[in-house]
Image (cartoon, rainbow, N blue to C red):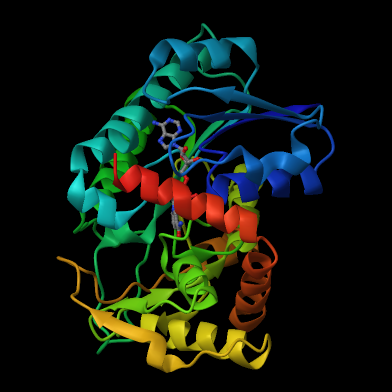
Length: 350
Ligand SMILES: NC(=O)c1ccc[n+]([C@@H]2O[C@H](COP(=O)([O-])OP(=O)(O)OC[C@H]3O[C@@H](n4cnc5c(N)ncnc54)[C@H](O)[C@@H]3O)[C@@H](O)[C@H]2O)c1
């Protein structure tokens, strides 16, 4: 039987990768992509699938209840996967309310619509439906680099530091509350830092690649010792698919690559790869240490053993191979990169 997915934020980085993943790995599906097309959304990411009969696009804001109800009434949605979010920590420091609007109010609106659309008239829900909230390891706060064995578990208390992380944690609490109060079937996935094609060059890896290609200084916060746990985006997509297909409803699943690296080492690896493999005449001298941002978390580290044990999910892409293919993708797509840099600039200047 056809499974119908409502993917919100599908024109962004992970959402567009997820739509490609679904259409490449499944036949009998319909994917509805709802996206407001903010500066972070780009339908070019989905150029390859726009005429695929299994794919539809609806331009709408997840805070718009009437528009969301219309989509949920027009299509018999089985899985609602909520990627739509304001996702850049730096911007959340400049304009936190925008983050509360989309990440908190938008998620609450989607929950309310899903609850109304999926009710079966007998106090239950249509068979097989699931609301999957795509969350982040940032909701857990920060770990100490001095205690490497300490990791974020699903039971780790939420302790967000940035307005972005706080808005995502609030959304997670609302999803759990709809599960407890209304028995809405849900899952929450909390993933570590993603990288791969279609990521906006305001995030570390594509920003550094873009600057290297232009031989511009590489702005690195503080001494670059912040540690992140990097996961190739397609592995994240596969994990979400596993949770939808086999996850125990009402559970949180951490997703991570067991791949902790300092920001400095990631940037040095990008410089080295562009220089040694692709012959770009650059060196680590391009690295420019800039003033750290406020409340910058020192270390994130995910314990993914629950999803590994329960759902047999494991990351497939080693970091070195994933980083090289990501670099190659950006090098091969200069118009995409220019367009993305222009949208970021336009957004910054209002
Ligand atoms: N990027 C990461 O490393 C990472 C890691 C863990 C979790 N996440 C989570 O994954 C999700 C996707 O992240 P991303 O990096 O792809 O983000 P992104 O910024 O690249 O994409 C966000 C998408 O949401 C859309 N959007 C924003 N506000 C909207 C609104 N009000 N209504 C409808 N659409 C709206 C944008 O147009 C864009 O297409 C987010 O929820 C984020 O918190 C990201």
